Amino acid sequence: MTLRHRFSWLPDLDRRVWLLSFGRLLSQFGNGFVLFYAPIFFVNQVGLSATAVGIGLGSGSVSGVVGRFLGGTAADSPQWGRRKTLLWSAAIAALADVGLVLADDLPLFIVANLLMGLGIGLYWPAAEAMVADLTKDSDRSEAFALVRLADSVGLSLGVALGGMLVALTESYRALFVIDGVTYLLFFAIIYVAIAEVQKSQVGKTTLQEGWRLALTDLTLWIYVSVNILFTTYLAQVQTTLPLYLKNVASGGVTTAQISALFTWHVVLTAVCQLPVARSLRRWPHPRTLALSALVWGAGFGGLWLAGTSGQTLVWGAVALAVLAVATVIYLPAASAYVVELAPEAQRGIYLSINSQCWAVGYFVGPPLGGWFMDQPATVAHRFWPLLGLTTLVAVGVLGYLSRRDAGRASKERSA
Image 1 (tube, rainbow, N blue to C red):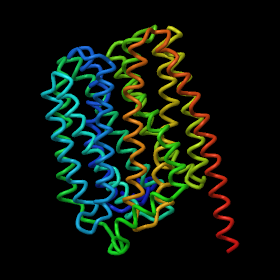
Image 2 (cartoon, rainbow, N blue to C red):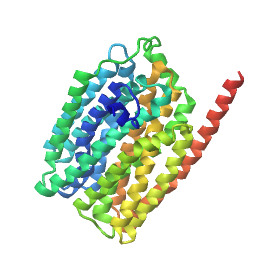
Image 3 (cartoon, helix red, strand yellow):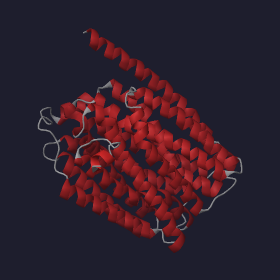
Image 4 (cartoon, rainbow, N blue to C red):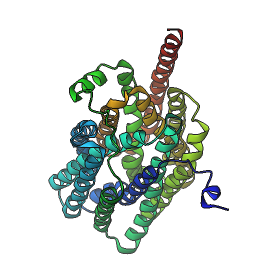
């Protein structure tokens, strides 16, 4: 049996998509160390308030806005392109980890997060434009699912091993060092193994014209309004939920138990990513995203039960399983829909605007969640049901987009 036949269930994608995914796995391995344990470390050991830590984490989204703007513009620029933009993103993110290692007060913590936001902002438009360039329309959802699978596997390994390292050494700062090393490895993979993929036709339209086209695309901006909700949901799970489980939930859990819960979450996300993407590949993207919103709402209801029922571990595991399904439905469809909307020569710019949703979501999410976590438990518990209600808004907007797309397709067929 040949290797290709044995793994025939895997998507048949360009080798560079696999290399890019592997590099992403490495960087997310380090991110798994940081995302889930930095809030706990800076609140419980450095002594910052949950609100201050939320502001610090949210500050990265301010620079992320700049990074995404520059990343989309550079990715579509003949002088820069996808590859050079990715190299700069990895280098800046590694420098940010140096700041986290040294941070022992709020100002330096904010500077480190500003650098991290800039690096991550540069990454997303260039990386997703590169994936789109290397895949056919019919394979694109699975290609984005593969990249997200690499995210999930890297996060699962990082969360699991990060929890073990903290339990054994109580050294949170070592996690930031390892995160910086993984970004340097990601830099090396791009530099050595991935050539520029930007097509020659990109650049025939000036960058100014590309931005004008994107900024006047009403369908894109309607979608952006709802995508901000999705990215806010992800931010709450990654930054607010660990504090909620540790400091607020009635059946409070240990750091090791939080690590186990999130390991369960990211492992399930990894296991489900490709099968779910394949099963939904023929669905219109707005319909897929509406299904995701409904599942997010159910997951937030489970988090409320986890915090108030006294059975934190049981309901936490159930809720995080539901949220894993919501995540794997959302991630590939979100990027694939924007690529579907974008003219080929403006993919970087369109994906830059789309990735701004992450900047906004991670700017609003951590401070909002941190504020609720600083309130009395009766107020903090209400956070998850309130968040669940917002999913109904997302379903309504996506239903409108679905009807709008169907009407446009009907006009094109009759023309």
